[in-house]
Length: 194
Ligand SMILES: C[S@@+](CC[C@H](N)C(=O)[O-])C[C@H]1O[C@@H](n2cnc3c(N)ncnc32)[C@H](O)[C@@H]1O
Image 1 (cartoon, protein in one colour):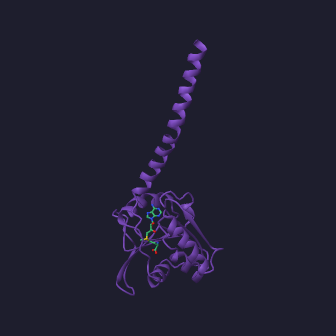
Image 2 (spheres, helix red, strand yellow; image 1 turned 90 degrees about the vertical axis):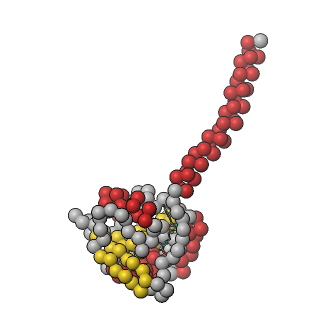
Image 3 (tube, rainbow, N blue to C red; image 1 turned 30 degrees about the horizontal axis):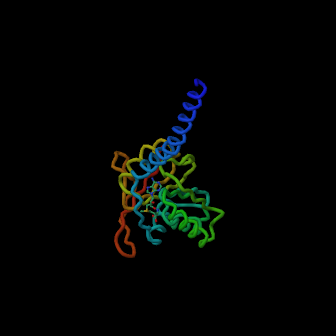
């Protein structure tokens, strides 16, 4: 009788575990979704003429490693690598953008120079390797990025941002109004100090 009860209890525990295990997995997936849903994945590409101006402002050379946080279709890094022969790392959360980036990089023939990664651009492990950072990200993202940039980037690293800047005391060293094909774009540049 006791043996029968023990067997029944064991079966119940197993059944509960089977029911709860997938639920537990879903909860973890939900947390990840929640974490990512705080980001606005709006996608607007920077016109090529504006990209060229941003890279010119940063005085990119062959020796640079350019990071594009929120790389969209990868156009900034494709132009940078093709024009200057520099290396590039692009990060985007949206898998559709990753696919497009890889296509752009291939179209420009710079696969050996540019690496595209899917993930959160605020959690880039080797961000300290950047010597140039290019951005076209909303003010909220810029404010999240500022303390990370301050803490992580090497002195001399240039950060060039299209249209948006962070809302802190770290003011850009250069601000220009640049006439693009359809409108005027505000471009900001900071150089990380010693
Ligand atoms: C306005 S688009 C800029 C694309 C590209 N840099 C350009 O200028 O052509 C912003 C991109 O950032 C991506 N994004 C937004 N938040 C992100 C995050 N936390 N991590 C990675 N990518 C993100 C979006 O998916 C989108 O592709």
